[in-house]
Length: 556
Image (tube, rainbow, N blue to C red; front, side):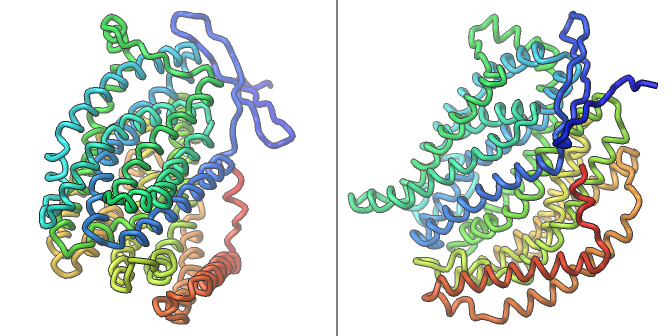
């Protein structure tokens, strides 16, 4: 008996599934879309994300070596954080969470002609909103800096520099919001490489600014930190520019219609209104995270000078595993989960979540152990140059260990939250995030007096663990996620390998005086590479010896 949905298998292992294409008001047609291997897609995103994080680390290294953890470094970090806050709130946060599921459902149910119309209308409304936002942001820069980090006023020069750089960099949100629109479209077509690669351009631009712009301004008696603001704007423009050919190739390059009648027509479209309605709770949910960031930055600005920078440098290292695992999995799983939900395939929906969570446990647990047991070698080798002192190494190490406590939760949220977003349920994660925000700030009251800036990262880490567990229990309770067999044995295997890894890393961290080797940077870096390579062998070897079949994760 023939299946109603036959699958065409090719020699390379990929396949085509028939998808019903039903443009609004038109007869249905059956077409075939390539079913891309999940592990291949995750690997593509992870590879480009790794390149992005390496270049981002080089960027932070140059900033640390050029300016150290100074008042001007704090000023730049605050000024850069302000447009990034709005970017995460409107672009990569609320907008993406609302746009991608609706776009994927529209594509699956109505076909590409209807999707192109939706893209044009959403793009037009987004362009108008961005223009208004950027103008207001430039005008209100002094108020924004005061709200973000009033403690910078302890150093008048640093505070004024933060205001000027905020004015110059705020339009960066316009570039990145349009990049988020483009990335959502490309991800819906399973074109993951371009969106994953674009952050590299920002880092390259900022590296160029630090390498060439800083000495050029310094030689002319101009504050050199302003070169970094120029690098940010150049990077934003380049990131948007590389999206255009990819969208044009798909025939999905947005056509902006900014006149009154066209905008009214765009706003009355049922799907754009649906996106708008979904953005409201999504914006609240994302704003919870950004409010937490705002509060923590405000607190850090009143701690000893350098606290904002120590947290920023530690955050850059924490983003390596977070982006390589969590972001890559979330980007790939979101359209897959939305497609499974739109087709009513609850079995595939649950299986996707199960696969993602097993990857999270397998890879984020050893990464968390590394941040806790091997933090000082990582910070010393990567940052301990130029103006970055031994005290900066110690303080950044403490902040990094706080992140390590909650790394598993931070990564798991990137897999669990799309399980709700794909169902167009944004309210539940928002409610959880609001409660976790309150809990996090209560922990700040307890931890900051004891651990200073490290107490801030510790509170966020513990809050992420609570958030992830709450999301997991919610999916289990509603029956959306049904764990497949073998979880108990799998967890024991990971724990056994992790126990051996802890012993190895504690020994390795004490093997070398990482701070004293500052003048022998190549030798110190060589030790780091050697010992980390040994850690990979120890963990994977121990997992294999415990009976864990690593090939099972390559089969999706």
